Length: 350
Ligand code: ADP
Image 1 (cartoon, rainbow, N blue to C red):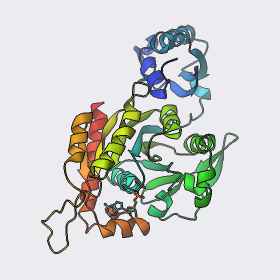
Image 2: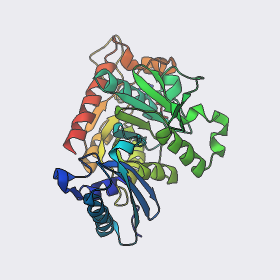
Image 3: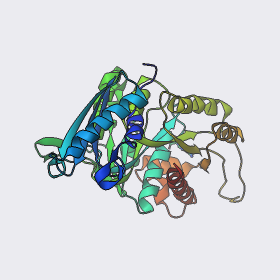
C-alpha cells in the first residue's frame, strides 16, 4: 500500500454512501458512530434507525464497495451496524472540530498559542477543550493553572472514563498529568500513542465545538500516527520570524500535507513577531527579522492568521496560569480573538 489511510480519507469516502430513506449521505446524517483504522483494517460503526430494515444490507455493501474503490482493494472493511436505541456515545462523537497546533521545533510558543487560542475560542461562544500532547514539554497544565491536579474518573456504562479538568472555560487534559518530566525521554512511541489514545477516546469530553491539540513539535512517527488516527479538521502552524524557524515549520507543514496525509493547513501564527516598548506604543521593532513568514504563507498558499508581539507579560501570564488573553489591558488578547475568528472562517471555507 503506497498510502496511509486516515480517518479523514474514510470519512470522505463515506460521504458517497447514501441512505436512501433520508436521501442524504451517511456522514451528513451523523450515522457514523466510530471509525477505527489499523494498517489495512478499517472498522466502521454505523447507526441505523432500526436493524431489521433492508437498507442496512444495502448501506453495508455500499460502504465496503466505496471504501475499496476509493482507498484500495486490499483494505479489509468491517461494518458494525448499531440500532439507534442502542447507540453508545461513540468516543469523540460530541466533538465537532479537532484542531492541531503544530510547530517545527520546541520553544517557538506553540503551547502559548494553543492555550490562548483555546481560551479565545471559548470567549467567542464555543465549547472548547485542549489536549496537551507535547510530551517533551507539557506546559498546558501550568498555563491553565492546574499543575499538580489530576483528572477525575467516572463510570459510564461499565467503562471508566477520565474527566478533564476545567479552567478559564476550557476542558483540559495533558500527557503531563501522567509523565514525570524526567521520564519523558524514556517513553517509547507506542507508549505515547497509547496514552494519547486514552486521553482522546477514554475521556469524557462531552459536546465540544473545538478540541485544540497541542502537538509535539517537529516531524516523526509520533506526530504522524497521532495525526493519522483522528479526523483532524485542520492545523494551525506556529513559527517565529527567523528564516531558520520558518524552514523548520515548513518541514512540519509538509508532513501534514503530503499525499499520504491530507489535513488542511488553516494558517500560520507568527509568534515573537515584533517588540513594542511600553513608552513607544506605536513603534514595532522586528528583532527576529521580517518577511520570512509571509514567504512561507505564500508558498503554502495559506493565510497568516496573526502576529503576536514579544512580551514579558506573555511569559509571566503563561507561567502564572492565566494566559495573556485573560488580561483585558493587554492588546495581545484582541489579536488572539482575531486569530480565533480567522480559524473559524478558514474552517467554514473547507
Ligand atoms: P513551545 O510550546 O513552542 O515549546 P511555549 O509556548 O512553551 O513554546 O513557549 C516557550 C517560552 O517562550 C515560554 O516561556 C513562553 O512564555 C515564552 N513565550 C512564548 N511566546 C512569547 C512571546 N510572544 N513573547 C515572549 N515570550 C514568549
